[in-house]
Image (cartoon, rainbow, N blue to C red; front, side, top):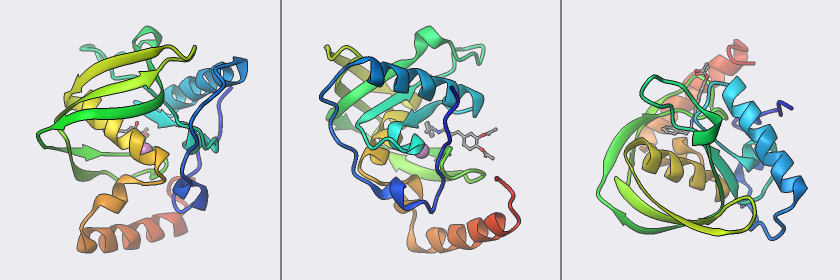
Length: 173
Ligand code: Y12
Ligand code: CO
């Protein structure tokens, strides 16, 4: 089932998501629905809070070399913790909760991630390039933070002006 993605400036996007403690069918259904929602919306990452569930769960599906997003390549990441972040990289990020806007954001270049899978099993992965960037973007959502909050004062002001205009013109609704 496709879920509704909430968009800026919805206040729920500022919520701090709670740790997942029960790895049950309800969680699995949420993850399935998040996958359908992300793929149908042309996204590569989605946090549960973006579909109004304030829990520490996110999914990522980085396209393969042919640009295909395969279900078997999808990462379901629960209660993630970043270890050993290193380096710096800049990438033009977008967010399904901020439609139509893409901005250069600086992130760590590589990291180690500790997390749980959908069954509560502990797992670790090493991430760099787009995966590392996407993990950091989605983990910001768990703290109620959007990529636009990482912009400089002037870039943020410009964004607010342009976004307000787009909302008025109902460009992305
Ligand atoms: C790098 C940068 C950002 C991330 C986080 C995941 N972000 C997305 O998946 C964003 C997708 C996105 C898709 C949109 O829809 C289309 O392009 C059709 C979109 O909508 C518009 O621009 C109108 C906005 C964002 C991971 C890695
Ligand atoms: Co986002």
